[in-house]
Length: 508
Ligand SMILES: Cc1cc2nc3c(=O)[nH]c(=O)nc-3n(C[C@H](O)[C@H](O)[C@H](O)COP(=O)(O)OP(=O)(O)OC[C@H]3O[C@@H](n4cnc5c(N)ncnc54)[C@H](O)[C@@H]3O)c2cc1C
Image 1: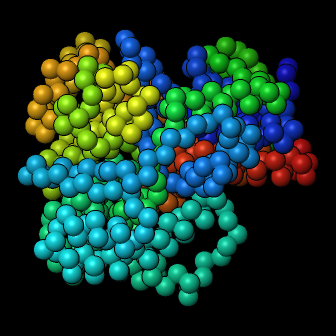
Image 2 (image 1 turned 30 degrees about the vertical axis):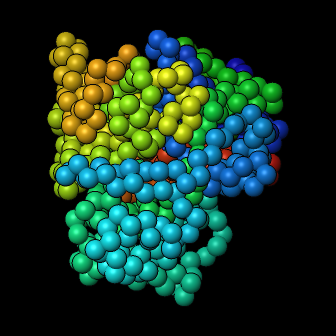
Image 3 (image 1 turned 180 degrees about the vertical axis):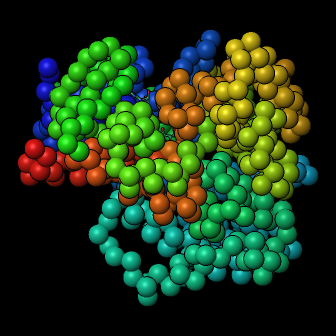
């Protein structure tokens, strides 16, 4: 039987950064992936003359540059892949929200909160004083909220200080609707503030205000795109793993994590291969790790209770279009366009559970800011909506194909309401559904952000589940840090915990 120091199950973002961190620290690492290619969601695919980015819309968190590295670039540098990743910055990039009336509100990435406030006032001059009042109250709070959440994800030792976090305490259990009312904001301004529902997958009536206002704070970062898309980061991390002596095993699905006396011993794959290691890191929602791989009989009751309190997050539908014309010819002027067909985002959330196309879409076109992402004179367009998987899983194979075709058509009809001639320019057209995503990321119900992102999940089943009470078992991935930034970071942070234990000889 082959022995390793650590086995990583799943080569999504977090599995990759986790495996590279462990290999960089001199551990003998095996990375096992069920697909024939690594990367999970972080991949690309070809159709005709187009190479489509499968998932990443844009980095908005602390990417920085080689010379002035932000958090993410520092992480890539520390992993030894910084010089392989080419970031294309888009300072002052525009972001468009289309309101149900068809009004287009164009905002930009700005440098200061004051500029951000002015952008909103420019779009809604009659509401200047309400907007000022709202921003003065909410921006310091949202900044602290994000700091608090990020510290939790990074397991920082900084303790929660009641004085320092007074704005956080004041607003934490508030609801944003009450604050809008106090500031007399119209439903159009509210809709612009909440237009990035695509980043948090929940609505302001359910979520605490920090998540909502944090979306605005993202405008204070430069937009950043990756040359070659997320696939280029996946490739760089795989090459680094191999350089450091790590092994990659593709086309093998781990079916069992061997646990004896509440200690990890190794894994068994569906190809009947067994590998031994005192530590296993899984890149998947804890439900799969425990119920499918460890087995309920080996899972402590405290863990089962945590799992029962959290829900697996949404999957998505994504329509990929290759157009035979530049994006502006069909009216796409920003790389990211948040399109509202209703003011009622709770209705949109209900629609994510049906086979009806929802009344909010995120329409993106990378080539607006990064020309290399589409052939010259053409455009790559992606139309994104969250989706639950259940209604797709309930279809039999022949129904599935029909529904997929009908859904594609409905999505195009909806898109045409604001981009009237888009259909006549389609050269390539491919819909990914939750079933497609289940194939690529193998997460329960094709979840793309781990657990459902909610106040409850953050408190009960977020990062606290990373280190299992089963000795040697660790969990990473989007349930620990959602999205691209969160999952890359979750991989390195959890691997450093493992390294500490391995170095101290902690797991025998
Ligand atoms: C269409 C789309 C758009 C998105 N847009 C954005 C965006 O703009 N910004 C953002 O931040 N995030 C976005 N996301 C979400 C982001 O892609 C994910 O949060 C992130 O990639 C999750 O990484 P992960 O480490 O959890 O692994 P995943 O990508 O979920 O990969 C898990 C890997 O583990 C493997 N695996 C699972 N089980 C096993 C097993 N038993 N044995 C072996 N291998 C196994 C899978 O095959 C897969 O390769 C988007 C996702 C999608 C699909």
